[in-house]
Length: 360
Image (tube, rainbow, N blue to C red):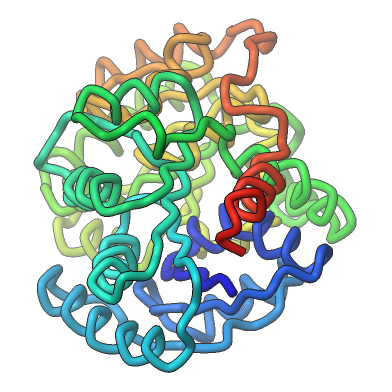
């Protein structure tokens, strides 16, 4: 039996193809949801929207300091794993949930599979980087999305026998969930938007929004973009970011439309139909690449260098002039780059590999 541990919305999205494959092929599994982000009720909507069975366990950890959050997860996950005795624990990505799941399982001599292994930003200022490095070194199976991510793990002395290149489950998720989102109806009509007639923004990272000068520069950069191109800028804003924006007394401008966070299916529609996306999210960089929508990343580094190499993405940091320059450069990109993240069958490859290895 397999235990899937997740705790954030991006993890729900990227694990959704794995859960669907298990459901369809009668693979025994259960889900622990740590509740690392927001609250369970908001995440429950995500499971409902993506038509996924509810998790067997909800830990309701909530946000907090890294040490406290991770410690609570270790304690609660351990009790469940001792009770359930799974053959393997699957984790995805680079959050505190991922590290806590991998560490708990390893200490109980339960095998660990890390989906999206081998990603590196080479910036230890990002807590995610520490989580992903430690999880890779704890894992028995590293399901790397690309040859580059495999190479990163090899450079750190991880045995090649443990690393399997399977593509990224984000491709499976985008393909499967885009169909669901089309059936749900268009958010564009609700917001009065035209296809490729707006910019989409997501900026939520602590290193960006918790610093007044960085957040102010991002908003100023967006204003310069609006002044030049006169397209509405849609920003589904995280409650915490909104709080910082108000606390820092950063002025909005006419073309900036702050909206409440939207569900994944609606967000997918906004992404797919945008003229260009500006983001500091790793997952959004991947989604834009898969959807062939130009992306400008509001960071100095990325653990998704493949998106840069194929011409789908550009790093600009948080300098307002660089943001405007990046948008000008990327806005007329030929949307014909090759998707570097696989064929959309990553979930199937992961589960079949584990079955062939007699883990499941």
